[in-house]
Length: 365
Image (cartoon, rainbow, N blue to C red; front, side, top):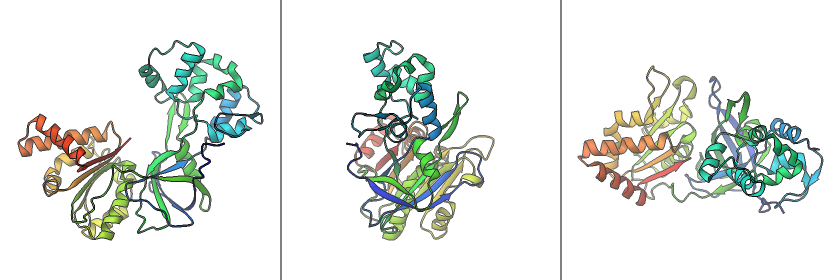
């Protein structure tokens, strides 16, 4: 029986908007999906989308392993299917799971990695085809190689809508993942699948609650939202919900690369700003000689957010955990030290206390 036997929702594509049509970087999209009945979720929750591996990558792996694409195989957890179907729908190909390397060490006596840490470092940025190219003797396993692979997992996306504004819809803000490595174009499995989807087609999805990224229950409580790129997603839902609730004190720090081509959701953000519903601070890293990031905007405008923080605001951070999140944490602690006269230890303890009290909430990846 398939691991997806619990029947995920069928979400119909209602609209797909290219938010960055004039940019040469991978594009960002707002995908609007609908269900046949009202969807139950709260701003800050996730939707998982199940993608499919690209036919090009599937064919390369079939060729590398010299497999018959029509051969019927039996994989653990799944019903019998063809090799081609298994590689397209069931198996993780675009990410190299360190668990595969562990199986090679335990089951096939490979000695290329002596620890889990080494496996994780090696797997970073590589895919299954990279592994076959690096260890060509693995192709001798033929169809048995497929049993080493991990199941194709749905990808998590922060929901970019509020159910009171869109009762039977869920919106996804995502970037098309594409990059070159070792003379090959790499593509994100689910972002590529969503990008190709057409109006009227359906995608498999599930709503997943995020208990640690929630709006305050009282609309009078101020909020400070901090995001870069598609980390903006949950804050679109936040703003819809806050406006519906009549909340006035909403502040957003948002960063991208170019104002002219990558100001995501520009019309909505500026409309909320002009209506006095949003205090918007933007920064675009590559529009000047010296790169400026969200944490630089936080530092330059520290009086604006520090005042809200002292009034009891919650801080929300969504985006990259290594760049954005660390930079934001360091900047906030620095401002606390300089403006409030705290020691480094006091600022660190205040950060930990605020996270425990859920006055600081992170959705980082």
